[in-house]
Image 1 (cartoon, each protein chain N blue to C red):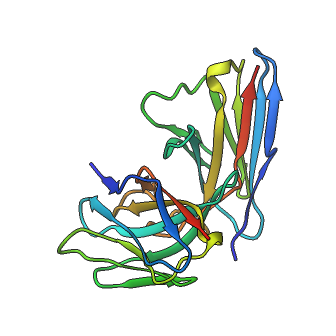
Image 2: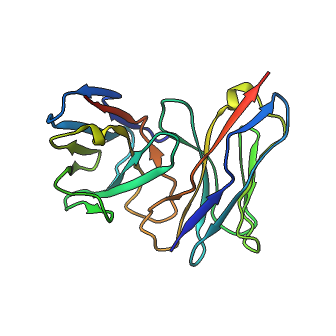
Amino acid sequence: GNSVTQMEGPVTLSEEAFLTINCTYTATGYPSLFWYVQYPGEGLQLLLKATKADDKGSNKGFEATYRKETTSFHLEKGSVQVSDSAVYFCALISTGGGNKLTFGTGTQLKVEL
Amino acid sequence: GAVVSQHPSRVICKSGTSVKIECRSLDFQATTMFWYRQFPKQSLMLMATSNEGSKATYEQGVEKDKFLINHASLTLSTLTVTSAHPEDSSFYICSASPGTGLSNQPQHFGDGTRLSIL
């Protein structure tokens, strides 16, 4: 079956530091890949997505590249801000999966001044 | 952009009460909506897929008589937690995608409902 593995958190960084949150996946076919962000007490917001190999999703300074050869979709940001503190979820929808999302366990990011 | 509204945002009630949570797609039609449950500091667990005009599809281990889902229109799905008990306390989140069930479309999430059963 499908699965998504994320690095465990919490990840604590100083403001303006470089961020990487690793994500790898297992899926049949050619899944679409997503990063969602959840701020405290809120639902999830789509951060970025990629639908085919070598696609790069980007939004608000965050980027992730769909690497089929390594089955990875690592999230990166060059300079984090305190306002980026949240939980980040990597997720996939597999081909023919009826639009069901499979989530990773989430990685909490804490950015300090 | 696509907006999903979930109501109420927070419910506190006594054990044995039934609680209804609404999920509305405000600016698009959704033949399919999804209901998730999230435990503290954990990922989202898909409970069921809500299908407009037909029965919901429940994931393994989710009691369909306990968690009643109704998807009466293309913009509204409801989840009713029947005879709720303290172990049902959790954060419930719904999501929906624009379109007619096409795969690979990003889902848009409601803000969630914090359910606390005393």
